Image (cartoon, rainbow, N blue to C red; front, side):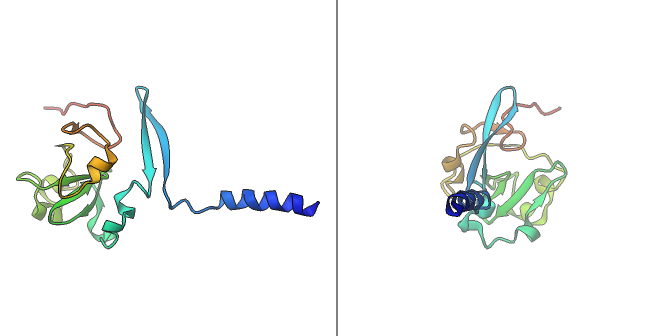
Amino acid sequence: MKKLIIIPLLILGSTLFADTSIGVRIQAPIGNNVNVNLGFRADDHRYDKRYKNFDYKKNGYYDDYGYYFGYFDNKGYFYNNIFFTYNNIYTYRDRINHRRNFSPSHIHYRPYKYHKVNNWNKARNYRKENQTIYGKYYDRNHHRRNK
C-alpha cells in the first residue's frame, strides 16, 4: 500500500522540479486578438551555443525604452532577439561604443531581413521579410513614428 502512494508522489514531484532548460514554448496574448509564441532558452540567442562566449554583462545592454541589445560581432548584432547586419546608419563602431543609433536613448527602427551570414531570422521567422520593426520583436502592432 505504501508503494502505491509513494510512487505517484515521486513521479509528481519529479515533474514539478524538472529542469526546463531544454526550451519551453508559451503562447501569450499581445492585444487585438494576436497571440505570439514566446520561447525560453531554446529560442533566445543568449542560450545558443554559438554565442555562449559573449560577455553579456559587459557588452549587452538595455536602452532607455527597455529594449535589449545583445550579442554582436563584426558582421552583425542582435536587437530583441532579431539579428541585423551593419550598414551606413547602424555601424560596428557605434555598436561597440553605444553611440549614435546604438545610444541607449535612440529608438531602433529597421526592416526585418534574412541574412546569409546568420540564419537566425529565417529559422525563427518572427516576421515577414522586409516588414519594418518598430519595437519589441513580439510586438506585431504597426506603430507610426511621430514626425
